[in-house]
Image 1 (tube, rainbow, N blue to C red):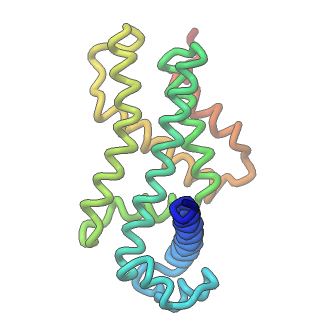
Image 2: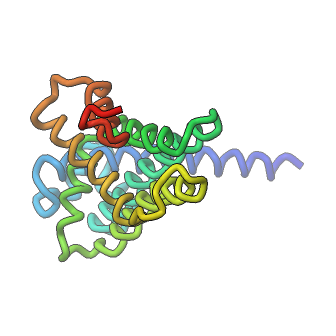
Image 3: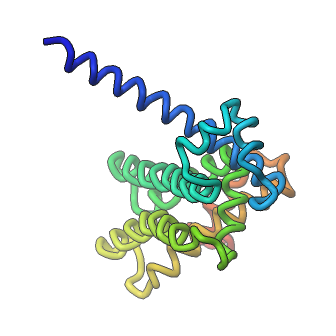
Length: 213
């Protein structure tokens, strides 16, 4: 009578351990690849940095390329989830769709502040066309942009935004604005706080650069 629950608990523990191991491998890989590039990074180095045996890498991922592809999925998935949660929370609390976009800007900055190495890799890989994972990267990029598109369409539907907005291009521009501004912040203006950067982007988002009401 007790064998099934015990088996389920054992499976849950095994799954939790595996996810923890994969997380360590993701963190090791993103750090090394950011430091020295994909080609120069070896599986041995990833295993050593993660504190696991080389065989553990291959147990979890068929190759270094598969590891990196899954790393991209994992990282952009976290970003997408944080953007969606920020927008949904803002709307639940009675905020406008502009407020939701502003909350997404901040969520993006928080993500980049926490994972700067991943963000550097992600932006660099967007410009490459000869990678085996290019199609995967395009898919996960669109998933992140689609969250912003949804908010823009909702704002258009309820009259908050102009119907002349080009939704796909505007959504991509907003995501790009956050990525580029945050990387510039980290690389060239690290003395600024996250609040400073968010305030500057918020003014751009809300059309207050000119100083007009």
